[in-house]
Length: 155
Image (cartoon, rainbow, N blue to C red; front, top):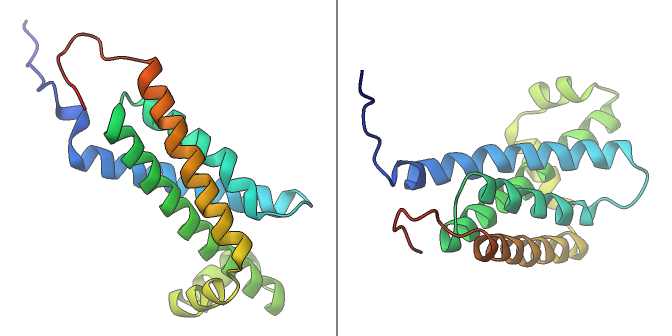
């Protein structure tokens, strides 16, 4: 039995990159929120090690060059937005005496997003900028250290 040939660029399609960035970003945002709830230290800069993890995730999926950098940057942006949304839900839960799950379902998207936006400070934006720089740099380094395996694909 012969295998059905798979196009060489199927794993590098725009849809695959977007899905990878979405899933990585959601996992990164949730991880950041749980780290912030669990550890007593300031939470803003936990996104930086998560950004390195997201860059490694993009490289692990065999994205190279500009594709790896773009996937990493998009995933970091998604992680930032999702974590801030979760932080807003945590603030609602804390002020109303609800569980996080109840706050997520009862408060609604608009209220939670408004609270998240209102609580963003300069440190949060600086942390995002640092995370983007570090994450995209890590993706670029990963792309240089791990070349393609002769399939002729170049970025």
